[in-house]
Length: 336
Ligand SMILES: Cc1cc2nc3c(=O)[nH]c(=O)nc-3n(C[C@H](O)[C@H](O)[C@H](O)COP(=O)(O)O)c2cc1C
Image (cartoon, rainbow, N blue to C red):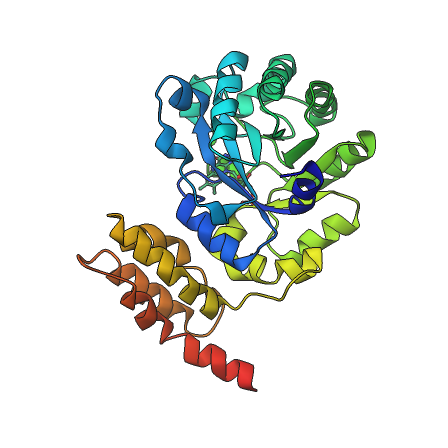
């Protein structure tokens, strides 16, 4: 995909989230927005290069534009992993410099890399040399006792100097000791101003903000303030229709708002083919539980799907059964 088109998609993206943004989730999100850039869960470079775990790269052609997020800190290994990702068809390779989990720390990658901008620059340069798709970085504003206003400009300068042309900044620090990964997404305070300052200091760099953004209006406001992109994680997962259904007309001025009932029905052929390939219904429907969040009938939709999808032999008819609790209400609302 051409760089301009990808930069345009990156005006709104769905964050990489382990165990959440798998291929089924991304397929659902793509039905809600044709434009938004979608990210995979993090895949570690050692898993691809040493473990040969190529199945981690499986995805559907419908998911594009889709970026592969890699975890790692060895430039040569990351370069190989990036090449494998490009060959698998990903539009972008993103390096994770923001994830604080223990497992990731022990492998010396993720947020701990905020302490080693030169190493990250080497990683970016090696990846850039290995692939022709874009290489991007997702980072924090700092870790532990670091002073973000000192370290972040140096970090951004290092990666930009190595050829990274797009960065997403999760606008809070990560504490590598003492906070769980979950707490690290909520406890350290958000500092959006520093992200705006980075855009001012590096005007040629595509800068996206991430962290705590819960509505399209909020996303729009950041774009109006001059940022190039907004990345949304949890809100896009828990209430995908609120974030993504109206995104195409509101963020890109294209298409019409997607109808969640229609989207649920459009998942049926996908579910059928997943089941006939030996998959289980709940693997797909678990990502659909939030589809009607905040809408009439949402509780029954969730309940029918979450209670029924694990039953042996459960199939697409369960989705229709759950829809019976929301679709008539949605249709009635449209009629008034
Ligand atoms: C369940 C979960 C898994 C996550 N996994 C990753 C990951 O693999 N890579 C990454 O860079 N960030 C990961 N994150 C962090 C998100 O990408 C994002 O930076 C964070 O949730 C803040 O954005 P939000 O407030 O919009 O959710 C994860 C977050 C959640 C909730």
